Length: 497
Image (cartoon, rainbow, N blue to C red):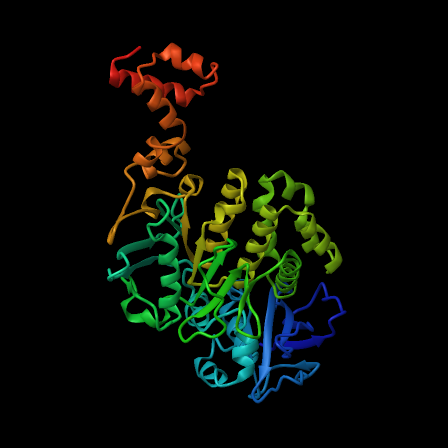
């Protein structure tokens, strides 16, 4: 069986028909001065067309100043070259081919997922670590991509724990996290909730330090379900926070996992941290959107943004149409600049996550509710869950918001409490997914709710001996349904009506 490869310029359309042919269209996307990207279409021996997406092709000894020209027509790449598909779609689509054709294609294009010896050799090349692995980690290659080619499932279970020891000035916690593939409701978002000061944010920061092997880290992971592969359990860690009191540090270099920071902070050349302004966030969004546009992530981004269309503003702006048109930077800037701060943060975060998340990413979010009204927050969490599922990733969210708790099952919620250096992590008593917000608020914050807000006002009135009618009159008949129920309960306890 013969398979012929053709290289075509970036301004050329793919043919609509062919047999046993592969077309590689040059893409001039620049990976830190390396140009290795090609869009690829394959026609099988029956003329069926397969759009594989994108592949990066490099050669041994390649420098940043050059793009190695491939022959305009060839049957196989020689030993100077090696390649890597840029998404699970690439390898999943190849799995729809007959085995003989699939293996011939992978062998002839020198694919480093298919050829383990070639992978070992390619890892010594700067072009591999800088360009080919820019959006894909070694964990993804050895895990997800190889698993796909072996006809395995993409989604995997997670079962891990994180533990911090009590010190002279810090409380200690042990938290377990489990993710079941295809579970309903989804279990890929885990929530840490509790009052201010219990250590939620500090815990997230410690998780980052542990994974990137920061010397000051004070915790450890226990990979319960994957004892043989602890070194590759996570492929990278991503932290997200848009708070002015953001706990995360945008580390430039790390010793452990690859680390991505998404947030307001930036490190200047003098190593001083400053906060980004709106113009800088616009530039960051445009770059991220462009990356997704050019590197085979259009469909993933389109799907994610479509999930946000339950919000009227996102629906009105029709942002997904930008992914169906030619690249237009000015139009993208214009739309982003029209957004409120909350909508802008959601769109930027979702776009950055589509850009950065890969298989076995651990995502950490600190108080995402800060800029979002409840319906937009719910839409964000559902969209986030879909992205995580698509990437076989997991998130841990620190929050005060029962709206977020309402979007996940009880098995994914840790209620944290602390008294001095004595800390406790426990599951809530009621099922949380879809539960009433008031019920969740009382369940999580309990006594604190009864001592604050309208609870305290009504309790004080009852303690002062007022009757139901007197209290109703005092508030000019403006008590809501829940307040009236609470009032009757308080009066019942006092035997006053």
